[in-house]
Length: 113
Image 1 (cartoon, rainbow, N blue to C red):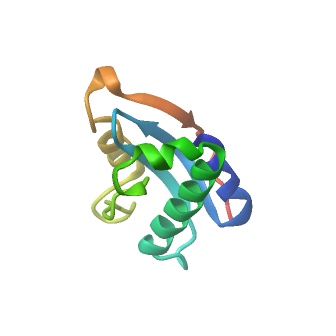
Image 2: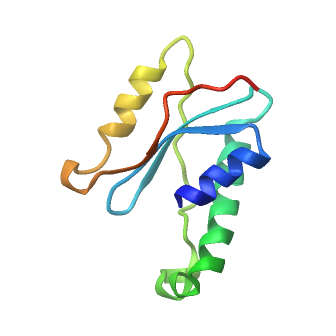
């Protein structure tokens, strides 16, 4: 998952700041350009990671009910008037159960596109 996400950074103007997971969810804190809509970012991440995970581990697709890696929904919040990076980072960290929560990747280096 981590490598798939970091390969997205090389092809798109999307930078992953944090990638964290619990038992059945993945949470991303990321930075992107304003010309990418939130739904475009979600579709890009889901489609590329889905394809790469299934190609690297074909058994995963057979083990999943319906063969879908991602659910149809997603939640996105943006840094702006009502939220800042710290609020969103705390939201990401407070999802799921603490004993199941795992940090997969973290950087503090924001990038200018």
